[in-house]
Image (cartoon, rainbow, N blue to C red; front, side):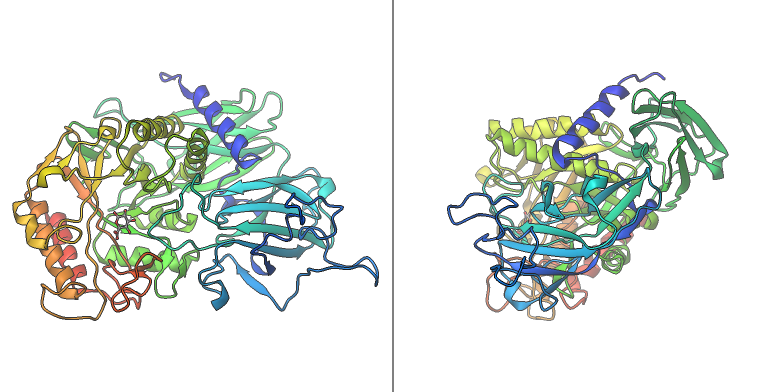
Length: 609
Ligand code: GCB
C-alpha cells in the first residue's frame, strides 16, 4: 500500500467518536439486527425542568423520588408522586413535537419522553446498543433509572451501549429528557433562519451485534493519482473487541472480488483494485452489494464507486468535468409543515429536485435524515452535506469548536460510504475575522483528516464594499471549491442589477454559487416589479440565469435557495410570509412556482451541452 496515512485516520475516527458519543458510533443500522422503539411515547412537558433539578436547582439523584427518570409508580398509598406518564399524553417518535399539538408550536424547552419495552437477546454473548438517529438538541437518556449519558447536537446519530445488568426481559423503562432551548455557545447558536423543531426527530432502535463487531468501515475509491489510474479502493474497517489473529474479508460478488485483510488491534487497512467496475454517476447510479465478514460478524451494504476531485479550474467526477445543477433543500416536509423523517418525505423532496433536472442537492444547513442520503445514492443525485455552523457562532470559544468538530465527525461517520456525497461543508455565511477563519480552517483540516476522498467547502459571503461583488474571503484559500451565497436583486437592488454586476473571484479554483433566491407567495400574481409576486421571482431567476451565462469558466455550478418554502420564525410579513420563508420554487401546498420553470430550462440547456 503506497499511502500509509491510514492508521492515523482510524485513530482520529475512533477517538473522536468515543469522546463525543459516549460509545462507538455503529454505522449502517439498516443492515443490523434491530428492534424498533419508534411509535407512541408518553411525555411530560417540563418548562421549569422540575423533573431534573430540585428546588435548590441541583440535579436530582435517583433517591429523590421526584426525578422524572425514576419510576412514576407510588411505593404505597401514602407515597406522593407529583408526576406520571400516561397514555393521555403521547408523541410520535420519530417526529418533532411542534407539529404534533398546537401547544407545542412555538415551544422551546424540555419534554420528557418515556417508552416501556420488553427485550430478550437473540444470542447470549451479543452486545446491545440503543441508537438514536437524531434528537434536537440535547438528550439525557436513562434506562431503568440509570443514566446512560447525554448527547448534544440536533442532527446527528448517537448510541449508548447497554450493559446486560441494565436491561430486563420485561418492563424496561426508557426515559429521554429532550431540551431544544437555544444557547449562544451551541451549534447552531441562538440565531437561525429555520424552525427549531424539538423532539426525538429520527428513529430509535435497539441494535444487537456480536461481542466482536464490525463497528464501521470505509470502502470507497481513493482519489486517482493519475488520470488513467485503475479504480482502486483504499479504505479501512474498524472492529470493536476484535478477536486475536482476526481477519476481515471484503466481497463484491458482482465483480467477483473477494479479499481478506489482516486485523491489527481493532483496525484493518483495506486496499484493492476494481477493474471493470461501473462507476457511480447521476447518469448511472450503480450500487454494488458489498459484504464484510469477520469470524464473528457480517455486514452487507450497497455502495457506489466514483471519484471526485478538482483540477485547476475544473471539478471532475470520475475524471470528467462536472457542472452541478443543484438546489438547496431544508429537512422539512413543507406540505405538512414538519421535520422530514420518512422515506416518503425523502422521495417527495428528491423527486421535485429530479423533475427540476437537478443532478445535485445542497442539504442545508445540517445533516439530513439518513434516508435522504441513501435515496440520493440510489437516485443518482450528488450531495453537499453540511454542519450547522451557521452565521455568528462563538468563534473564540474552544468548547464551541469541539462541539462543531464532534458534529462534523458524526456527520462524516454516518455517511462516509455514500457515493452521492461529494462535498462536506463546514458552515454557512460566517462573518470574516481572524478568529473565525482559524475556527473554520481547523474544521476543514478535521474534515480532510476524517475523509480524504471528498471535497471540503463552506458557503461564504460576497464582499459588497464599494458596490462591487468580490469573493475574497480568506477561507477561500483552504476550501477545495470556493462557494458563496448571493442575492443580487432581492437583498440588494432589483433583479436588473445582475446585468451590470462584475464578479471578481480572487481564487483560481472552481467556484460554486451555493445560494441565490427571491421570495414569493405561491399563487400571488402581479407585474414583475411587485415584490412577493411569482412574477418578481420569475424575473429574478431570468436575470440571474443571464448572469450565470456570463460567468468565467471556473463556474462549476449552483444550488439556488431553495427547493420548497420552509417555516422560519424570522419571517413575519403578515400577508406574504406568516412565519414562512417563501423563497421556495415549490410552495407549501406543493405547487411549483413560475421561477421553477426558468431554472429548469437553464438546467436543460446545461444538460444539452
Ligand atoms: C441565506 C441563508 C439561508 C437563509 C437565506 C434567506 O443566506 O444561508 O439560511 O434562509 O439566506 O432566505 O435569506
